[in-house]
Image 1 (cartoon, chains in turn brown, purple):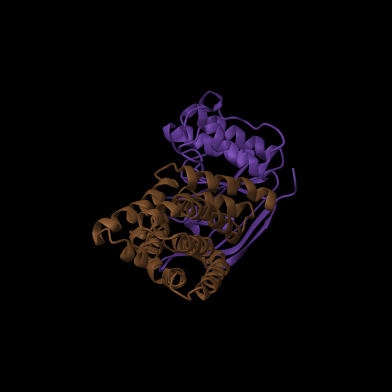
Image 2: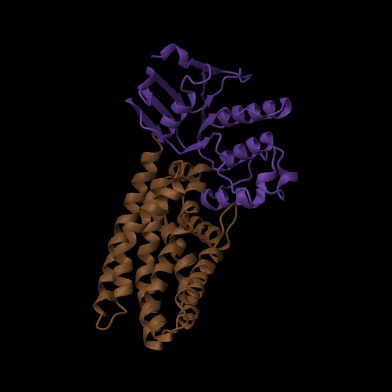
Length: 220
Length: 191
C-alpha cells in the first residue's frame, strides 16, 4: 500500500510546490506572507518597540492567511479530473490519499514559511528569542493549519464559490492555533506551545477521516 | 487473466428525488460484453458508477470479483504534463507487465495532454484503462469523439480484451459492431 502510494505523494508534492494547471505553487503563499510583514510597518509606523510587541501576532495572522490562499487547489482540481475516482477503483482509501496530501501541503507551505520567518522577524524588529519561539510555534502549528486546510478543501470541493466559502470556514477553525501560536510569544507564554501542538495533533488526527468522508459524500 | 465477475442484483438508482430505474439486474463474467443502451439521461452513467462502487445504489447489491478499470468523461491525466508523463503516472501505480495497445498514441507522447483533441483524449483514456490490466472494464460512452477508424479500432480492442478473458460493460447510446454483445435496454427498467 505504502509502495503504491509513493507515486501519488510525489505527484501531490510536485503539484503543490511547483504548481501547474492553475495552481500557483509554493511561491504565492510565501510572497503573501512576506508582503504582510513588509506592509505592516508602513501602516503602524517605524516604532521598533511597538513593532516588536505586535510583530509576532502579525506573523501568525500572515501565516494563517497564507495557509488559506491555496485552499481551492488542494483537492478540487483532482476531484474534477477524476483522479480520486480512479484511485478509489484501485483500492486506495481516501484517508490515505488525504494524509499524503496534508504532508505534501505542509511541506509546500509550512516549510517555506519557516524559512521566510527570519525575514519577517527582521522587518518587524523581533529579537532572536522571539524569532526562536515563532519558529518553534510555526513548526508545531503549521501541520495543524495544513490538516485543517485539506479538510476544508475536501469539504468545499465541487461547490460553487467553494474557494470563498473555504476561506470563511477556515478562519474560525484555525482560531485556536492563532491564539496559542501568538499567545506563546507573550511573557510566560511558553505553555502556549504545548497547547498549539495539542491543537495540531487533534487536527491531524481528525482531518483525513473528515476529508475522506467529505469526498465520499461528494460522489452521491 | 485473473478470474472476474460482476453481478448486479435488483438495482435501483435515485438521483435527487427522482428514481431513474429500478429492478435492474445484470451479470457479466469472463469473456462477456454487456452493452447498456438507452436514451440520454436514463441513468447509464449512474449505473456504470454504481457498478464501479463509486455511487451507492438506492436499492440492490453489486458483487465484484476482480479488479475494475473505468473510463468515463473524466480523463484523470494531468493537463500540463506530456501524454507520456501523464500515462506514466498511472503505470507507476498499476505496474503493467507488458506493453498494451497504444491506440495510435505513439506520435503524441511528447504532446501536453491539454493540447490533445477530443478523440485523442478518448484514446488516451482507453490507453490508461488498458494499461491498468484490470480484467473488468467499465466504459462510459467509449466511442464518443472517436473518428470512424478509431471507433472501429477501439471496438477491436474491446473484443480482444474479452477474448483474453476479460469482462466489459459499455454504456453507449451508439450501436456497437462487436460480436456476441448482450444488449440491456436501461429504458425497460425506467421508473
